[in-house]
Length: 130
Image (tube, rainbow, N blue to C red; front, side, top):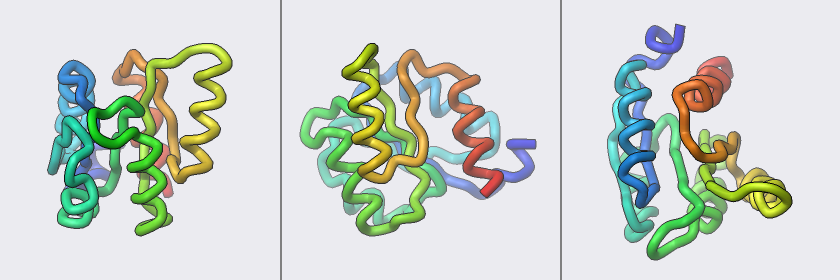
């Protein structure tokens, strides 16, 4: 059961999309995972991440100041076991190429938008099983 296994867990969101943040926050909080921080532009990302060291990090590819691949790569550099979910809205060949880059950079999962509860559940359950 996701809720039982995830008590006292935290998450951090890096996305400029309020709708995505709301969907993720609603799902996580319904499953006892607290959203400790929501960063909309990528600024000061390293300090925010270091201050919380969250259970899971959701990183959108498109950010105002830093792109998501930069953030994924650097979090992975500091903490190789970090559970990072990379999110994007690309499709076709460009999506496959981007997903491979994200996984190579250190993402442990990829979600292609639109974000749904099913996609979130599959990611979180995989992380809780490890």
